[in-house]
Length: 458
Image 1: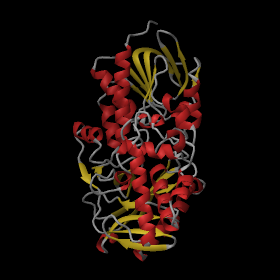
Image 2: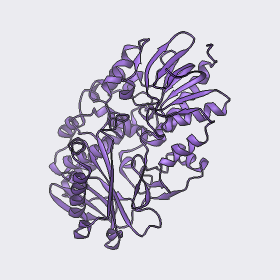
Image 3: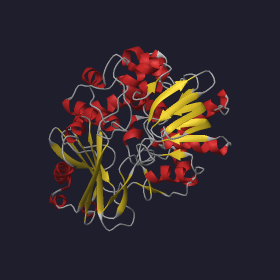
Image 4: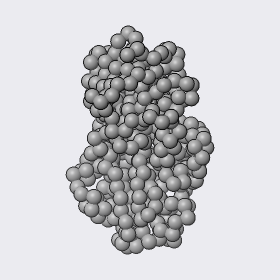
């Protein structure tokens, strides 16, 4: 052990939640130590390069209703611009690839009506849920006894409608419909407003805005504004011990003693830490029962955005393609064309066993299927396997199987003595999004201040 430190507050995790908490505590004059296992900041946001352009390999979209993320961009002098959405979209259901304009897809009429009815039912159910306590909703015991797949099979009556709702579920949770509780998905919808808001690019859609130069800059700029020495990279935490007056955090580079601790990582990552002073049983079970979704994000580059020339927006979804959904990711002002897409759920786990070059071939075949032969000759490819990342174990967000939220949900935000919890999984607004991460960090700061802070004695 190379060093010992004492501070008012220690924070585990230098994603948006942890960095926002550190910033606000430092501004209030508190001494803070931020411990990050990776060699970078950003958590589930990460920058990369494709054909000389900066790209987002992690979280990137911001909705106009995500006020905290929008305000943070302004605070950090980052410019927002609109996701390209001009032109027709592509949807493949049951082997049929169809183009369409607007928000209503081309599919069999009965399937379309079936899907519309299902989405309306989801929105009505979500309105009965308080995002702060989904487990207290009147129908929560029923909803948390079934998977989304069980609900789809029971509620919907057409094959095409079911296939589309399965595809939407996979896109939202990066999980298969049989893996995730209906209450879990409903809680995500409740925290965002409507399911249409979650999936849309236009209007109040959660995919409407992007950050010029990349959303990964949010974390980088937050980190740059922290006092020197506050942030410690390559410092995975392996043990935490708590007493009535302080918390001792042991990490790869030494030991920190703090009055309060904020754990700003996903529950499944917190499970790797040895809590030498045992946590309440519900919290410990939550660590074991809230795995991450499964996703690999990939970007494909072309000499030009040929799909725009052909009247396509670049958006495509499919119930059978391994790669998708897909969207335009061309940087503003670039002469080249970029598309971004995802290997999610079962496809993500399968492709995590493949090489990057093999994933490239699969992605290009999918793009060809949607946008024609011009897609056959990309000039670049880059991806991020979040599943195999040891400090992420997947993405975008932690999910729960049936029975978990009812039993362990109350432990998501409940402080455990001097230990507080942050991260987008604990957000009460925009859970799973960057905005939710920011909100959770701010909420943790409020808790810490209310609980009282002092400097431990050596």
